[in-house]
Image (cartoon, rainbow, N blue to C red):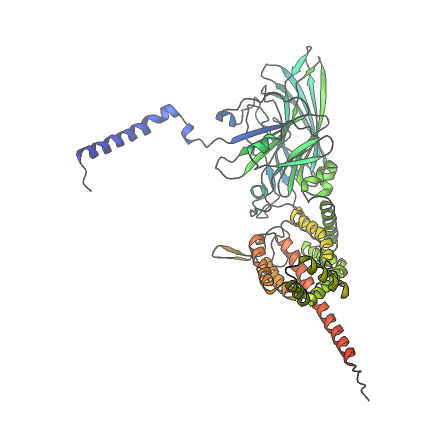
Length: 577
């Protein structure tokens, strides 16, 4: 390539400019050019009192944790049957929750750890850690830790002296007590030790944050199961929810809500916070700065500013739940809390709770959730055996009348009312109910939908192995071919579905039958990554249906042979000995 003088001059000038930039730019921009992108924060406040003006957006530098006046102390741990809570005495926050061996890490090296990752948005001492105390209006500083006493393995007492931005000091006594496997109670007394009246600024008690299940556990992502929602319960007892990844308008609608409790849930876990008196509940969402669709969500209980007389105090009680979405554990927190499992609408949810209870009851006997699913499926199919028999028999009768029905439609194709009358007469003549094959099946649909919800939401199934299945809450992948996961159960279910269609009596014309044969392939494509617990249930159910259909066909053949023999007048032959 030939370069003229102007081109050479341009290259030299450009190189000189780059050298000058890299030499002097750091003196002007400092360290900010290498800093990671600041998280995008959206806040929404559910209130029981008039909402206060929103705090100004914090600059990027405020995203760094503030340095407390007192250095961090060794963590204090209290234990429940569900796990271990690690508390930092200076901030008063639960820095980590390590669950027991019921909920292991993806590599099964130890209990699943729930760590608060929500960044500090203010200079508050507690930031947004679980059960930490902060003030977004008047940042607090720890003056000293007055008392740090572990009463026993399940109870801890912490007394601190705090200072607000105006220089006022007050004491905060926090007693952490295990209530049950996954629930703590925080009794917090805010005390004015001075001889003058003290105005306590607006305070917030954080519920911590909860990530999407795949991020928290490391499990395989499943779009159908990555449920991540904000949950809240009104004082009237109505539970409502909003998807975390919904648009900004939906998120903004969370404001001005009167609530009993609020929190965040993912596929298997829930984090809920409740106060003993009406408070504002603040929700804040931080988007992943890398641009992924993952969010961290924090919920906090906001205490309005109040006045304390000299040497007086005010006590608040908070109930905190961080654990699996299991009906019994959630109802122990609040009677309405089990609705965060989202097991469908009534009566589907009622049936799903029954299915979960039976599943766990069977597990207590057989010690395997795989066999429990098989037994539960067989139990349900056995209960509906007479109904299915009647439906199949009705479809077979309709199939027998199909040629005559087709003849009537063709003969009276220009007279639909006459055709309808003739077909009704034909049904009465042969004692056939055209809806006889549909109604019995419709009765079963709510039960099977409830079982689908129950198996898809059961946290007990995670990391439960069965045969070649490593995890009943994940697809039963056995290998990868050219990057495609090989999931045997869903493939077997598809083949069984084709066999069942071949055996099922139908009154459809040949073209409609061919279209229906394509349905299994469509279902295979849509449902390929379903959890293996669901595909196991469906496969067992299909095998039962095929066996029932074959049994009915043999019974029908014997009945037809007997009827034909009777019509011909044949008598059974007697064999002489």
